[in-house]
Amino acid sequence: MSTETEPRTEEETSGDTAVYVYGIVPSDVELDPETRGVGDPPAKVVTVQSGPLAALVSEIPQDTPLGRPEDLSAHAGLLDAAAAELPVLPLRFGAVVSDVDAVKEELLDANREDFSSALEQLEGKAEYLVRARYDEQAILREILAENDRMTQLVEAIRDKPEEATRNERMALGELISRSIEEKRAVDTQRAADALAELGVQLAARQPTHEEEAVHLAVLADVERQDELEDVVDELAEEWEGRVEMRLLGPLAAYDFVVTRTPE
Image (cartoon, rainbow, N blue to C red; front, side, top):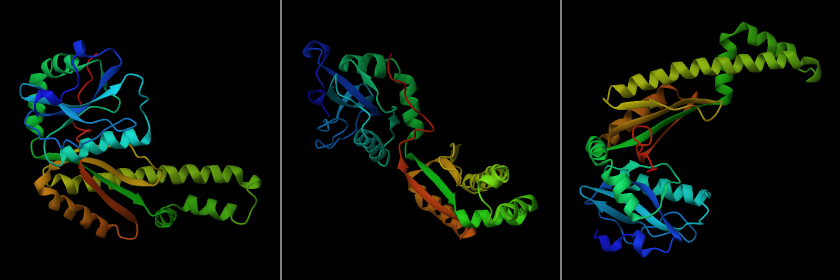
């Protein structure tokens, strides 16, 4: 895309706008002219180019409030769509710089070697998320069957007022939480071992729910997505009735490389 599509330079602005940066891509990217990003109304997304690199950006008013769910979705959606087709280095949500010159000089030019190397390593790859959540009743039955102390506590509080069994209920809750953490560690390792056979990169994510069994980020070749799906399907079959599996992606590689906003 030619520089005619870029936001205005510092000399052309009146200080009322800033440049929102989504991520870094190769300079030969072809961007749909109808692509929109953050803001209300959504701002047009264009490229700022410098040598072999380009930044995906939008020009926005400086007083634009960011943080709406729509903005988060637009930021992630733009980068995830790009990651399905080409290497992309994502910036975290909310990366705003003063003008196009700052994008070129402080971001692209200042990090040209590192960005070029990272894009080369991401060629043909994207991030996927492997997520699994325990079936609440199934995991409770499993835990109770393995722990006599927990079974005793369940019997102790059965059909009794909550006030009279507060200590027992607290102890039971702690034992359940600890048992799920232990099972999560075992099951996460099982999933990681199965995925590692594909030669992918893995990064563990923190659980976002108390009944989450697995939360792994995977950096894999987009062309091998079918193989990734097969592994997840095999795990789902192995854990049928116990765990619900999901595979999300392709996504931007947040867990493996994230660029820094210029100071």
